[in-house]
Length: 414
Image 1 (cartoon, helix red, strand yellow):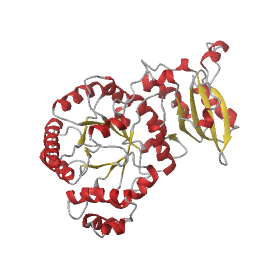
Image 2: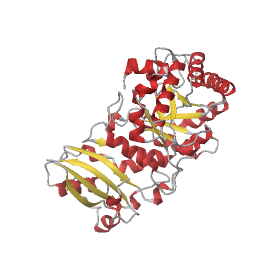
Image 3: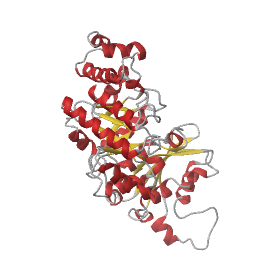
Image 4: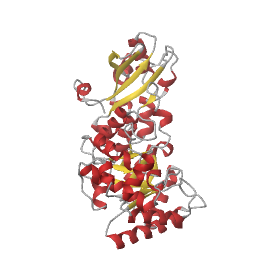
C-alpha cells in the first residue's frame, strides 16, 4: 500500500508502484525506461507499437523525487487493462510490476518498495478466511494480549512421537501456538500424517488437563498441484492450522487453499527465502509488497520480522510497514495476524510489544527449547514476560518471584 499522501492524487483505478532507483541517468529517462520495459516498450523501435496501444496500456511516470546522491523514488502507474487478476493471478501481476526491470543495464539498482492495488484486482482474490480475529476466536482468546507460540526444534530430526511430546510440554507451560519449522514437511523420519495425528492427541490432552485451547501449524508446503490434497489429508488427521512457505511455494498455493471450501483451518504463512529478495535495501522487492500479496491471496497469519530485535537481519521501519499493510483497511478484507519470530526469547518481549503492540503472535523456538529448566519452564517464562509487560513492571523486578523468567534472563538477558 502507498501512504495517504501518495494516494491523494491517484485515480484509485490503476496499479501504482513506488520504485527506489539508483542510476546515473537523468531520472526521468530511467523512470520512463522502467515504465516502458514493463508495459508497451522494448529496447528498439518496433513496427507493431502504436500511439493507440500506448494510450491504453503504457505505464506512466507519475513523479520522481531525489532521496540520495544517485538514488530516487519513482511512482509509476500501470493501467488496469495490463492485468489479468482472475486467470493470470499474482504470477502475471508480478511479471508486470517486478519483471525485467531488475536487469536493465542503465540502472545500478532498483527496488519495488510499495504497491497500490485497486479494488477491482483485490476483490478478484479470496482474502483471509479467518484473519487475526478468527485465530484468536478459535483459541478462545481476546485481543489485548499477544498469542505466544514456539517452533519445534531442531528444525528437522524429531520423529512424530517426540514432536507431539514437545507440543504437549509447551502447551502445559501455557503457550497457545506451536508450529513446524519451514524445512519440515513429509520426510520419512517424520511422516506428515503420523505427525499430525500425534500432535492432535497432544493438543487434546493439553485441553483436557488445563482447559486451554492450542493450535499447531502443520507445514504442507509442496507443489501447487498437490497442496490441496495434502491439506485435506492433514485436516482429516486432526490438524488445527496449516502452514505454507509462500515464497518457495508461490502465492497461488495460498490462493488455492483459501478459495477451497474444504480447507476449514487458518493458513499460517512463513516467508522463508524472502531475505534473498528483500534484504538489499536498494535492489529487489520489499517485504511490504509480499505482505500485501499474501493478504490478498488469503493468508491468515504472516511472519513480519522482529522489528530490529532478535537474531534475524531486519529493518524496523520495513517490518512495521509490513505489519501495517496486514491490518489497515483493505477493501473490507480481514486483518492478517502479524507473526514475530527469529531469535526471540522472554527478555525481548517487552521491547517487541512496546514497538508492535499486543495484537500479534510471538514465536520463540530456541527461546523456549533452550531454557535451562526445560520446555515447560521456557513456555512459562514467555508468559511471565507478558505478565510483567501488562502489569507495567520491569522484567528484573517481576523475575524475583518467578524463577522461570529469572533463569531465562540469566542466560539471554534483556
